[in-house]
Length: 398
Image (cartoon, rainbow, N blue to C red):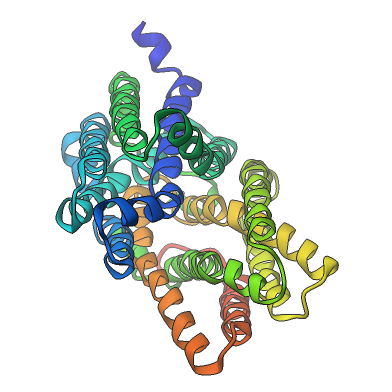
């Protein structure tokens, strides 16, 4: 049984199932459930929005903690901690009667997301496969499907079980079981997962240390590309539906566009990982960034069938490929050995992307429309993409 659980496809499947639940139950479902929670427990929209902010901020600022627990306690115990935190967070939402328990639940979910999400998963997957691009692509693709499925699962559960509390209760049980299952698989993975030092590609043969990597401009270019892409995605998802509504699209049609984009993104994640193995990670990274240059630009242009079609494809590719490309570029340039700490650092710095919606809202209030913020996003992504294009892989001692 242990030998079956330790097989790389089984381990990857269990980690992907946990990520599916994370993406289905946290960021992508909370916004859908909130209107009913606001009505039933008497939250103001300011209080509801603040809880959503706590979810994002707690996820960002705790990004370095899983790296510490993995190095000291191992992957398995880290995943168990993640499963328990997620269970407690979802249970808090299910039992919420006011702002205190609601806020506590979102904080627990944010921290649990770090302990059970992409930080431990990329560490394990990178050490299980000689060429982990395809496996990472599949992992993020399944998470993308969770983004699509979460709101649908809520609507079904609310219809069948008459309310929103059962959805959070089921999410609590499912996340605990998935966390324990992933922990059981990683517990019997060969010990090299805990102390992997083998590297990927000729660039990393010198075996970078986290301290040495942090001193290179290349690391900060990768982090900037990830943060810029996350800023574009977050800000577009905050305002695009309202913007398109002001341009004459119905709410249903605008929401459908993003559901289709999420499906395109799931496919893009899988393809990006495979493509990175064949041609190297720089080309798919620039493709993803180019898509995120085009997506907000299309929103700023007059709305029509062509601009909407280009936007749909561009945001889908950019949304799906950016996570995979950043992870594989980090691995290719600095290798497996420091990846746990560097990926955690990248997640921490990317918390700055949360400023995008705040800045965008201020621009909207000042100008009366969203066009300016979309043009700013496109320009910001273009500047960072130019930096990636001009940057060469790091060499030891430089």
